[in-house]
Amino acid sequence: MIRTKSMNNFKRITIFSLLILFILLIIDKFGILDDLGFYLTTRIDNHPLPRIYFPIFIGIGLFLPLIQRILKYKEYFERRCLDLYLYLLLWQIINELVLVVLIGKWIGVLVGLIFTIARLFQLRTLLKEAVCFRQTRIILLMSLFLWLSNIIQILFNRIIPVLLINLL
Image (cartoon, rainbow, N blue to C red; front, side, top):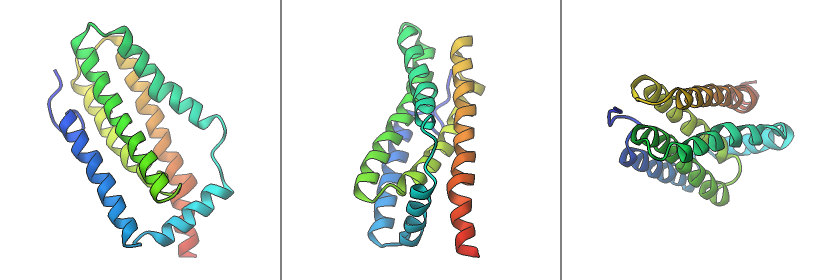
């Protein structure tokens, strides 16, 4: 059974996601991160991600859990576990789409970082507490490693270079 704490409760995921959306819109309205936005946009333009990056994340991060969810539709705990994961992912996509259109592509880096950190905590809890089949656990483990690699990519390809530019 999954406890209703952190990112393992639909209501908390919704509140967290709406809060992130609201906070980032407010931050943008007051221009607090304008310099960061400029430097991140420059970094994104000059150092785009490899073409294979998004297909890998869509395949492992979205389609594998979604297919498993469809295949295990009769299993309550499987559904619950995968639904929570997919629900947080859906909110990330919604936040990124809305904020990138309203603010700019650089905000996708912050949204990705925030939601990836939340997802890592969620996956850790799901793997620790969820009662699910071996295939689902393997998919969740694959997702955990995928999102860990995303954090590393965001830090080393986006955040650290921008911070170094500003410090030097």
